[in-house]
Image (cartoon, rainbow, N blue to C red):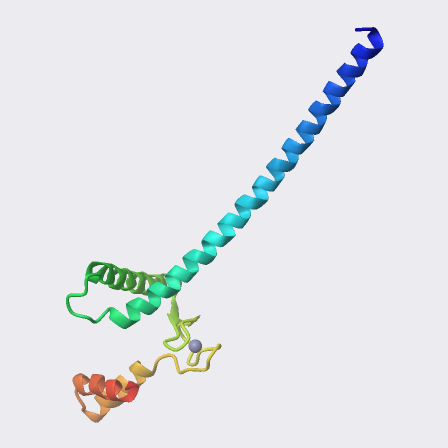
Length: 148
Ligand SMILES: [Zn+2]
């Protein structure tokens, strides 16, 4: 093999290696994109499963002896813990939560700034009823019939 042929071969080898490296880099870039696509699909799937779970829970949570009763109970307990923590947060932040839309409002606010609902109807009703001499239990029953 003469010098020219040797360098020619060497050049080709380097060029090939360069091409291989470039294609390797392209593969890695594409791999990152494919991973992102997989994650996006997984998120969509999780949302769909969660939506299905919500529907299923709403339909079956009251069924006696349901095989998923343990899961239902865990959900109810979780919801209760969230309510307790939200109460705690309310006290810490000195805010009140709108019973209609769930948004936060200053404790002294009378109406929700988002949906316009009266924020402390219970207190006013309580004091009104108490002033009229009606016991608290009746107040609770009144509220039940109103919401039904
Ligand atoms: Zn509201």
